[in-house]
Length: 249
Image (cartoon, rainbow, N blue to C red; front, side):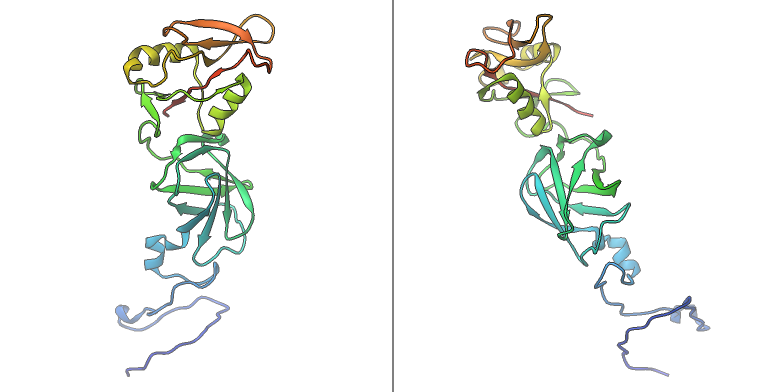
């Protein structure tokens, strides 16, 4: 007997068993999209992963996400997928459906590497132990503003502002990169020289210290092998330009 459409809310205290002789009739049709995070979902919704996709808002390092249906709480193993609006790295937080900002960490639970959160490219994070951990994906090459010195090393194309050593180190870290080591600088300087901007304009900071007390090192004043040690104290005479390195995983 054909029946008209039925609209109802049903709560069961046990399993639902469909017993029609024809297996094609043992089905529930026209289940609406989920309205809450405890609603029943169809196979189609499950296959599309629609409940994990989030609309992005907020700022470059404080990202807000909105799920449909909205999440009522953070749960262990919760997965969110989103398309970042801007490329970023370093210290980043996610705030899902206004539940509160939680740190977003990269591999080995460190700050986000620069090429792991890229504008327009899929990002996926899992909530675990009170933080979100970005799930790894294949590397897409050097981040914007960096050139490949070899298969593993990306070197910043333009030199940055003049600043103190510790500010320079923090500047690179906030971008998900770091200051270059001596061997990285020499290799990239020789391999990429004509493609680099601001090369030999001024001293540049290197991620290294000397044997002397409170001294740090600068490179690249007149040639790739230019190097000197200066005091790491905050003083107008002890500043240099910053250029960051990034290693592909």
